[in-house]
Length: 208
Length: 208
Image 1: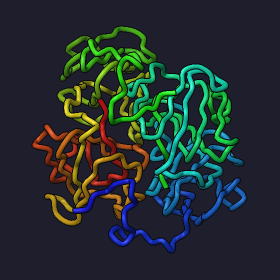
Image 2: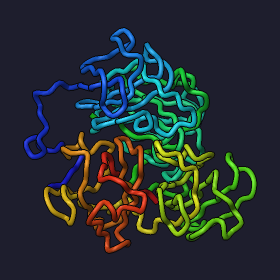
Image 3: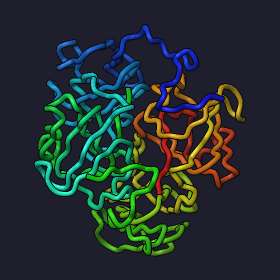
């Protein structure tokens, strides 16, 4: 019996990881359940329509961590995609009340790195008020001692995180990265073009 | 700045946790957004209709980890509920294709304990084939080295876990506990009355 631990990494020979494979690779399909026209991507795609797709309806992530967007040019709702299979929109949407069923652009999350991920959340915007440093996964911020269901601002020191509207990593998803805007997110309007509120109830690191 | 770490626990005085509060407490509401008739629960409820509710449409978890069920007597789809606010069905459903919008029973997850949680997953049913011991959170089992998107059987040695159909803790949820059936889940039919397949792509510990 082997033990899956995050640090140190599992020896690739034990589990069959192929280190000659591209660092980032995803296959997108125009139909659900991996049917119809498909394309392999190993770098960002700003507009899937320019590649002859009207939409993406299923996804197989083969390596790396990715983020998909509702609109082209990385705008609108965000969908974190880690290695595995997503046969339809519900599989990657994160249980949204607003059923958009659209993914028009996607890109690798280059700063995803589990070992050293670290961020600070602040009670108020512009990095003011009470603050807490996070370096783990928190399915319920309230259970971990953060008294409110809102976060005012954030700074990512290292790595990448996904912040979620509801506990258990559900609801709207916001990707936060150290290599975007120097890791500074001073106001909830900086979390993404789709963000409507400062509500965040769970946060976790994004895996390679 | 304080550091949120899981081990050791955060001093309660720092973060305002009230240790005189009940270990398990949830408030359920008949309407969305915490409106209408409500009731506090500190122990299991086998049938919410016996308490005059036609359904539960929003939930505030005040302490402990809970699991809600689609049907009475803890049957049907499962919804893990950790501390925080769930204003409507989408907030706790886990992005299901099948929109049931029903919660008829719920109970505390008594074996949820983060520090020592441990389970083994097996490739085939009846604890056969390749096996791996898990003692952490795994948003993508495939990224961590488990080559398939299925799990054949499981044994929970300590604590409680939620196993999810898709990566990133999405899709159908199956609660696995050390104090149910001695922690043995020899076949996917043992994972819950709603389980239709052996597909599991993410697993995490359940928090107090």
